Amino acid sequence: MASCQEKESPQLKEAAAIHNEAHEIMESIEPEMASLDSLQSQLANKKIAVTDTAAVASAIASLDKVKTDFKEWEANLVTVPGVEDEHEHEHKEGDHEHHHHEHKKAPDATPEQHLEIQKEIKKNIEQIQSELKSAKSQAESLLKQ
Image 1 (cartoon, rainbow, N blue to C red):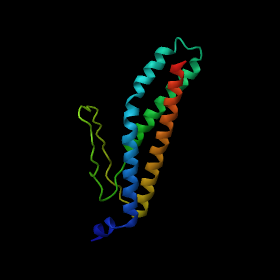
Image 2: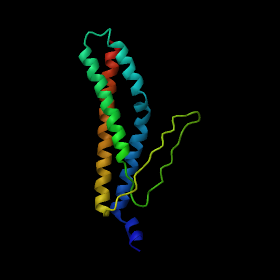
Image 3: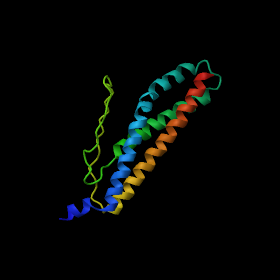
Image 4: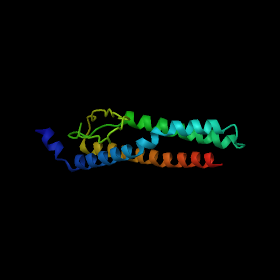
């Protein structure tokens, strides 16, 4: 009966809520992540005309870092016991960019540890979201020059 008690744990419930919040952030930034390759191409093409090539190189590097960080974050995403496979992906008709997320099975840990893991996961996706906004802003301002 230990598993039933675990599912009722307040820490696991909070961990599940945090996991879902992190998942929502991920879904909200996915469309922007998909546009980064195009932004990088535009910057690379503009590099020839721009006098400040260091700024363009820096912007491209920032976009690369965000893409790498996001892939690593997705690779390290783990579920919470009792909430595996609960994510429903709503896609608009004609949305062919279906992104399947492989969550790692929840590690063997105490409810308190699960809570800490999910807090760290959410903190990391919030950091990526912030880096994404900054990198896109930097790139877009260079493209306007």
